[in-house]
Length: 576
Image (cartoon, rainbow, N blue to C red; front, side, top):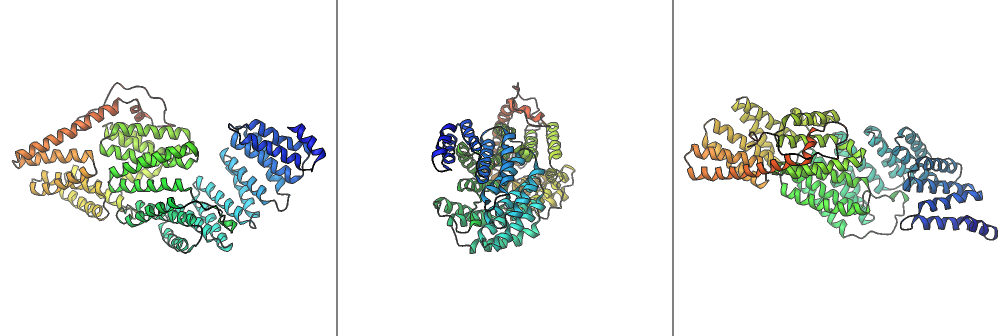
């Protein structure tokens, strides 16, 4: 190839050797399978011709990019990218190569955990790119993302604010909205709710007023509505969120009917997409699952999880984007909670093992989900009556992340979460019940009922009703007990919540027996027996799985190999 190119260079136009080598390199890169070694040889041959600076810089960028994306030769990739960045800064009117080199090199530094090298590089590139709107915005987004990954949300928000103002000045309301919505997302993560409200109001106005590419407009609306829905769900407002969630579902249906418009925006600052259509579709499934889970519509949650996971499997065949694995883990975390409630512990355990395998493949995913993984294992341990292991799992979760304190302490100081406040009252009611302070327990539980009814928190409602029924039964008020237990059983069957059904049927059996209703007592006893058998079989199946050994894992990465189990080693007495 090189010999042919040199011969051509002697008799033809000066750059024909370059075009020939470039053509060969691209041919080898896009072959099936790609012939990366030959592609690299062709690009390296360019330097033998002592090319002008522009060609030299571009070739270093191309080599750095190929080596970074297709090989493990990190040092050589770094060398070429650093040379591309250094040379291109000396060449006027060479923005694309200059800023692509800066962007790719900082990405490389981050991948190699050289964050302190990436930050000054991006800051310099941002400083000198103000006359190039597309690159200036892209580099601002990149540095904001880097700060976000480092959990420095204040710096990330500041940069997104700078980006929003810059986009406004260069006349890009679309990209201004993207910056502001991204900032809103981080403010939600920081729980700065007083700043979120005016920002979302401004975003809503910008999105509605912007006239442009229909897909871009609808994708802005999806971003805006996803933030609104998650804001409501974070506050435990399951009923209040319904109009927003419906709008979001209609919006994603509209997007799926639109064809991608090949016409590029006239403003270079508008050349951004938030997420591909297919990713947005999975995200809408995900927030729908979150809503169904909180509201206690577990069969609906399962239906949407199945749809989303099926779509994810198809996407992951063609797309290696890390966000897809994140979506998959969050969906599995929700469906695992559903399985534990509906009495499918063995399936839950296998899905916990799936999450472990996904986290094994990505250190960042594990870092972000280790606390949730230990918490789910703790909940599984409780469901199979391994209380010491449950405590060890919750302790491990606490060591990784402080967010679990909310669930363990159940304090009242939750001004932002209706759901957690209602749950805290329930826990106080449960504690008072065990301490024999029945009037105090009733007061707490009535508060839970009032709050859970206001926002359709069905599982809390069912749990409160059955506990109130139990208290009235202990106090000898059989009529009032019946008024609580019957709707508790109906609601638990609708969810379905196996533990509440078991508890309700046992209480109905004792209640009818005490009232002399022999037929009803027999029917309730039969129900209780059926639920007991289902739970017992599932308990044995779960404890017999090799994955049951995960309950002993409390440190480092989760194990991938499991020893086979001989059978359950835990007592079933308290379970039934």
